[in-house]
Length: 95
Image (tube, rainbow, N blue to C red; front, top):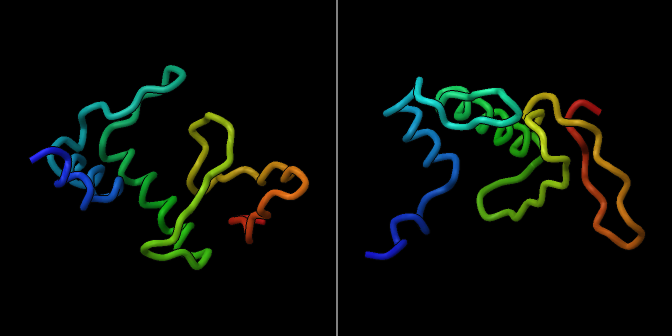
C-alpha cells in the first residue's frame, strides 16, 4: 500500500476530513494558542480562496515567503522586498 493514498490527496482535503471527524479536537498549538481541526480547516479554506482569487488553480505551483507566524489567511502581511533577480510576487490580497 505505501503512501499511494496520500499522493492523491490535497492538504486541504486531509484537513477537511479530520475536521469532519474531530472538529473540536486540538489540531495545532503555536506560541500558546490552540486551534481545533474546525478552526484550522476554516483558515486553510480562507488561504485557498485567496489563492483562487489571485487566479491560481489546480496544478499551479505556489511558494509562500513569510515569517513563521499564525497570521496567514485574510490578514496576510505585505510581501517582503524581493532580492535582485528573484521572482516578483503578483497582486497581494488587501493591497
